[in-house]
Length: 221
Image (cartoon, rainbow, N blue to C red; front, side):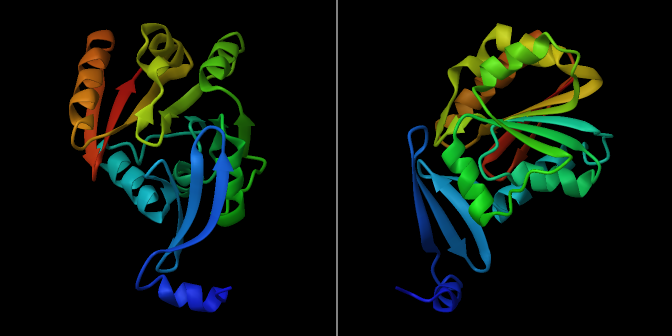
């Protein structure tokens, strides 16, 4: 077995797979070490890690949302927790609820990416659509909702339903922001553009920002 020191040194030359998890939702999940950073890969797509944190940070900057006051946030799709890292740096006192249906990918994040629950950060292993429906009958509302519901390159179909979109909107405080992540390369460009057109027909204050191979679509309530 290769020593961790040797593996770390090799990661500066070639990314090293250091662990594998089997998930009934995401299939094979790999933990990759590249340079001195770890990231998760599932379905041929990077799910979490330092580069993805940069994607989210650049996207929020382009949307001019880095100075948006956020005291409560809901993340639908957690994986290894890259958006958690971004939000807690921007808003150290933010209270975050993160929902993911896959306990295996969450465990990988805990094992390798420093994903730790705290007084201000709670994880719910649950179906996002069911969680949203249950949240609607409570008084809990959010300043920010971030939706990133991919399995590999496939996005959950229900997120484009009018019912789900309206439900998310209702969960926002006035002035709150709803953000969708969409892949934005090759055939996924047209899918994202079609979704943007649909969103724009439902809501008034819609903006977009491209960050690397992703498109962030934001709606302000």
